Amino acid sequence: MGGIGKTQICLRFIEEMSDCFSHVFWIDASSTDTITQGLRGICNLPEAQSFSLDGSPQSALWWINSLGDNYAMVFDNADNLTPEELEQYHPSGLGGNILITSRNSGLKRLTLHENSLEVKEMEENDAISLLLKAACLDESQKDLQVEASKIVNELFCIPLAIDQAGAFIAFGDTDIRDYIKEYSRYREKLLSYPAFKGASTYNRTVYQTWELSYKEIQQRANSYDSEKAEAASSAMLLMAMFSFFHCDGISEEIFSYAATLKHEKNEANKQIPALPLASHVIDQKLLQLDETGKWDNFIFKEGLWVLFSFSLIKLGSSKGIYTVHPLIHAWGRDRMSSEDRQKHCLMAYVMLACSLSKDFNEQPYQFRRILITHLRANIQHSVMAKNKMVERYFDDAHEHFGRLLKEQGYNSEAEEFQIQVLDARSRIIGEEHPGTISAMGHLAHTYERLGKYADAEELQIKVLDLRNIFLGEEHPDTILAQGDLAHTYHSLGKYADAEKLQIKKLQIKVLDLRKRLMGEEHPITINAMENLAITLYYLQKYTDAARLENQVVDVRKKVFGEEHPKTVQAVAFLS
Image (cartoon, rainbow, N blue to C red):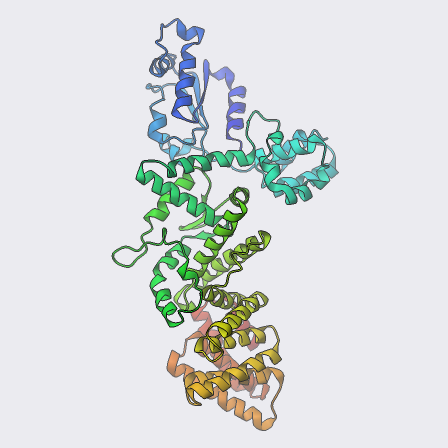
């Protein structure tokens, strides 16, 4: 990663070990041109001139090779070269010591695994010392160390960022105690402003360092080499989207599901063609299918390889999971114009929406846990950017996200989405459309979760009336609507002894129907079983209630696992 201190570590190593080397050659390896220039400069050394070199890079390498085993040669900032391109500038013999600094992890191929080292963030104590030194402050003062600790953690202990922060504080306009407040307001300026490059010899700001990598990718995207251009374009698209996900736990499954669910969503869209849909505006470039109907992830992988090569992303905790350093993640958004931020925030939002199946049971619960993290991060980025584009209504996105937020316990946020769905459908397709009635039911469930039982009752009465009119009293959806209303009546305490018996009979009827239609282990069947268990409990039929709730616990452990919120809830009720 740029700004992590690779060059400084190399300089310090050469300085401390200089007595071990007969000669030290420092080559700027930013490009083949700078390497060539550096090698030609070596030909001009007095010692080299005595060998009558012709001034070519090859003659310089020949001379270096003749020096024996004790020379050191540093190829610094070899970020944009392939292993093959760099290797041609290595002296041909087996002697000597070669060090390479690079963000390109592919250069590991030039050496043994044990000889490559990833430079990571500084230890906190070292970072505090660097900050106070750069800020020209007394390192021994405890109160300054406390303030410095807050700053280095905010900057994730990246040496260049800390050096810059110290330079800004030393400039005198801001006290160390106020730096985080200033950073929160002016992060982009503080990390990119040339006047605060810091005290080191590294002549770039933090953001300039990553911007150089991005410009190289842009150049590749405009290349005449179509394969190289395609990979770079994919990398730019991924970087733009990743910047509006959460920085951690970016799952390949988001793209895989979005690709394979295209057919399902196209079929669903035909049912209500008048509604605006996220699946109509999604970028298809990364979502191509192969001849078997599976996701063709080659273009996606090409983009990842480019981002890996510049250390703009890293592998996450498991296969198919990726992370972006929080500061690189922020830079990815800060570098964009306001218009591009809106565009890419929306693009990320749409990709998340299209990765979610209408039937939640078709996808692992763990995937939805990952997805909710990215959705909430995307919403936060949208709010911070005052993004009008993301405020656009997409029926499929709002419906799926409302249900997802409710499932994961974010009921107030779910309510906002579901109110928009109900309002839009009532306006566009009418209150009597099955999709609008379904939206009423989902919102009523969320009202129940929020303890808004009167609001839930009002909607559920409306749903039941419409189901009776259009489907009839014996239709399964009508019976389920009765069960929902019965549950709300129970929550409100709205029943006398006779009504209690009716609710019990109704819930038994709902449970039997759900077993018949969906099977005994379907989550909706288990919900009906738990509703009946609760009613039996309040009717003081404790043995029957415990028997049913035991079944609920067993099935939820089997289907969801012991740590799923629904399982925990059932265990708590049983106890």
